[in-house]
Length: 205
Ligand code: GAR
Image (cartoon, rainbow, N blue to C red; front, side, top):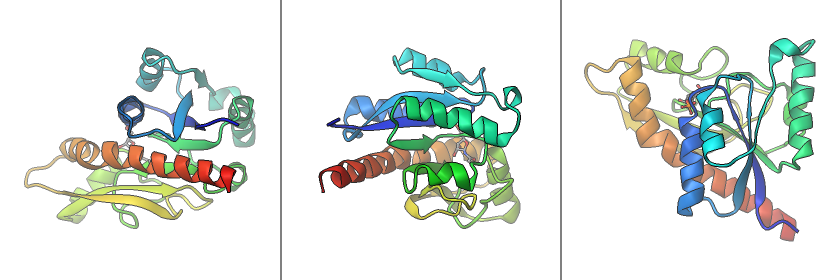
């Protein structure tokens, strides 16, 4: 029996959260799981270079090369099943997964979202848009959330949250950087370890 949960990280962009996961694996914050695949829906995502630099296998599945969303998800599922993936971490993955896809990994997909859910979340809230909405509203505290992924966008059970202050003069870019540094890069690896440890426990139970 494998002694670690096999983790796939799904990415679309720069991959700073992927980097935090890789660093956490190297520093012993993640011990119950191992990242065995980085899967992207964008062939020019810098996250792919980060994975290659860390010696992690990569795969790219492009929506435009598939007949429809179902075909796109089928191809992703094939890549995941081929590597016997136990859990999925969405780390800046900019495509909403269908209820059908999610049903293949119940309580085994986690996502990092750059706000304190239930604020500034759901369809249309991603990346800098989230921080712009927080600044427009005028909140004084924001943060990040790691949650399980279910059929409702950003609607699954919360695993970890961390608050971050909004400062006078913040732009969406400045706030995004602070939320990443003070929250996302800390709670995503911790949550990944919690879920991987739970999966190992379920195996031996
Ligand atoms: C992160 O801030 C992540 O929370 C956000 O995209 C960024 C990706 O950055 N995700 C969402 O908005 C999902 N709704 P990264 O590629 O550097 O990790």
